[in-house]
Image 1 (cartoon, rainbow, N blue to C red):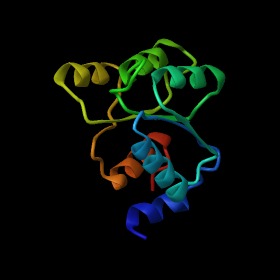
Image 2: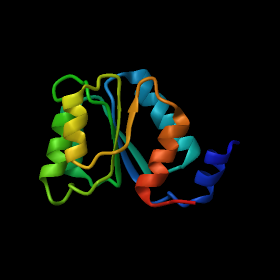
Image 3: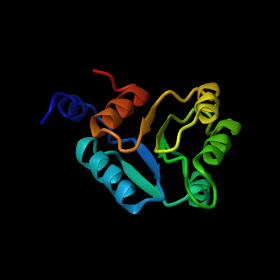
Length: 139
């Protein structure tokens, strides 16, 4: 066990509800597996695209959203816009994991206050550090 995993395992994430939005099955499964193993949250809900994510966001509240930007049907920016436009969801922490980032996307994310952006392929330790930072479970 490394230092990051040790710190995370000492924290109580048992009430954390996480939504993971990723169209690539392999990446979505990797993120889910890592989060289950390293922080064991209350629930992990998966969505394969932006439309499915918006449906799940309309039916349940989440403490954290991890999403890709480039997806079919509705992209990650549309999901973020939905979250930021609604008072009920505007303060949900967001971690973006994407292989497609250009200056206009980065600029918009900065305007929305999104500071946790990981590029694919991402380092799993950085994902765990981002979760810790965003959920206030700092060491």
